[in-house]
Amino acid sequence: MESRCAYLLITTISIMLKMKRRDFLKQTGLAGTAMMMPKFVFSSADYLNALNQTGNKLVVIQLSGGNDSLNTVIPYSNDEYYKLRPNISIPKKECLTITQDLGFNPAMAEFHDFLQKGILSVITNVGYPNPDRSHFRSMDIWHTAGDSSHFLTEGWIGRYLDTQQNAQSHWAIETDDSLSLALKGKNLKGLAVSNIETLYRDSKKAEKYSRIIENHDEPLVNYLYKTLADTRKSAQYLHQELNRTKVQRTFPATDFGKDMRTIAELILSDCETRIYYTSLNGFDTHVNQKQSHFNKLRVLNEGLDAFVNELRDRNKWNEVTILVFSEFGRRVQQNASNGTDHGTAGNVFVISNSLKKPGINGLLPDLTDLDNGDLKYKIDFRSVYSELINKKLGGNANEIIQGDFGKIDLFK
Image (cartoon, rainbow, N blue to C red):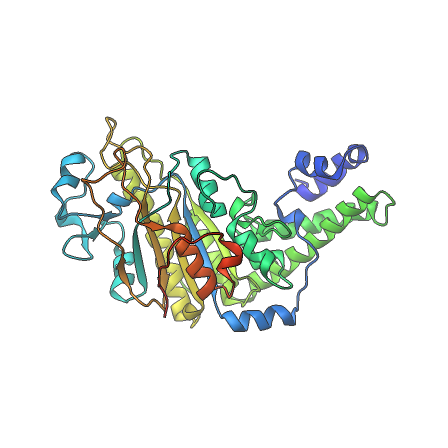
C-alpha cells in the first residue's frame, strides 16, 4: 500500500494550487501531525546543553474516559463508600494497603511496590473550579491548563516548547496517529507517530514522488515538498534511535505495553526527546464497571512495571518522571447499571526517584461533603503542571501556566 505521504502528494497536487495553505492543511489532515514538523536539527549543541541542565525526561500517561479514583485508591475504612457502592465497591480484604484508611485496587500490585520503594506520590482530590463533566471539554481544560470559562488553542506542553530556545518538534513525541491539544503550541507542535517503523518505511516509499515537485515555483507545492523532506529526516532519525538499543525485559503485548516499550527504547538510546505522551483508553465505566476497571488498571500496572524496571536495570530511571492523569473522576454513588457516571475530582500519580514526600499527598476524599454528588477538588491540577515545568523540565511555569493555583512541593 502506498504511504500516506505519497498518497497525499499524488492526490492533492492537482487541487492544492487552487487552495489556500490553511485550507489545504485542514482538508488533508496534515495539521498537528508529523508532516507539520519544521526542519530537523539532528546534532544541536544548544539542545544538549539544555538537556544537561534539566537532566530529566517526562512521560505523560493519559487515562482516557474518566478513571474512577475511588475504586483505584479505595477508602476502605469509610462506611459511606460501601453504602453508596453496594455492588461495585472493593472489599477491604482485597485492597493493597497504603494507610490505615486507603488501599490500592488489587490490580495495582506494582503501584503498591512503587509505593514501598518510595517512588510513587498519590495526589488526591485533584481537579479545577467549576468542573465540566464532558469528556471533550474537560480533556481540553487539562490539555491547555485553562479553566472552564476559557477556550484556549495551545496546550501546556506546546507552550512549554514555545518558550524553549532552539526547541524542535521531536522534543515532545506522542505515540498516536494524531496530536493531542496538549502538545500544540503557537509556534511549535510536538510530533505524533504511532509506529516509527511504519513512518520510516512510508517516508522512503514517498521519496520518489517528492522528486516530482522538487523546485516547483508554486509556494504551496514547495511547502509540501519541504515538509515531506523534513518528515523523511525525522523518520530516519527516530528509526536509527529506536534500533540503537533494545529492551531486555518482556513488555506486555497490549497496545499500552507496546507504547511503553517504544518509549523505553528511545530513552535508552538517549533520543533527543524531553516529553513522551501516551494514552490508555477505556475508563468510561458506565456499565458493569468492577471487572472492566480492574482489567484496565492491570494493563496500566503491567506496562509501567516493565517500563520502570527496564529503566532501573539499565541505569536510566533517575532521568525519568511519570505523570498519570485522567480528565475527571467518577460520581461517588454507583448507577443503576453497576457502573459510575462522570464525576469531577480524582487522583493523579507521579512516579519518580526524586520525590520529596512519597505516598499520599493530599486529604482523604470526603464522601459526606459533595458537590452535587461528586468529590470536591482540593488540589488544582495546574499546580502539578507548574511543579513539573519548574523542577523537571527546566522551564518557567509563570510563562506557561497563567495564574496562581497554589503550590505543591513534590520533588527534592
